[in-house]
Image (tube, rainbow, N blue to C red; front, top):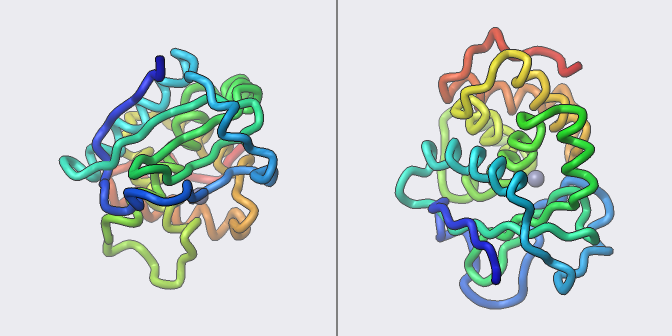
Length: 200
Ligand SMILES: [Zn+2]
């Protein structure tokens, strides 16, 4: 049975039919991904995705897309795929384990927040979003906003930043640009600026 994690993040950004479309890959091996190897997620991963999603829901409130989660050994780190009207989040279990070992829960929450940031970006505008930012920087900014809503300690915010810095997409700019976008979202969504700084 498929374990389905349904939340409401905006529905309108996803095509309701047609081929699955890869929206974001936090790694460089996207071409090796085989959807046929999708498996149900672990309970631990689901719990952390749920934590990020609960925070994202405080942003999109009642108009949020359905998110489904899969574990897949052929996935490149963490992938967000638009598939049949749903946001499909696919994670590589070895990578999630490595991120968790180094950065704890906050590291996983941060990477998921970035992926969900693409969905938020498609449906919501915000005054702090710089028009010059690329899609990846806007998703980072929404990740910052989501992290601000995640009740993280200062140490957890640093861990979250470390995980984001360690797992960029191939098209991400340098970290200082990313930190600016993440910080803008974080502070505008109620996060304490004092918790931000260079990742360890
Ligand atoms: Zn992305």
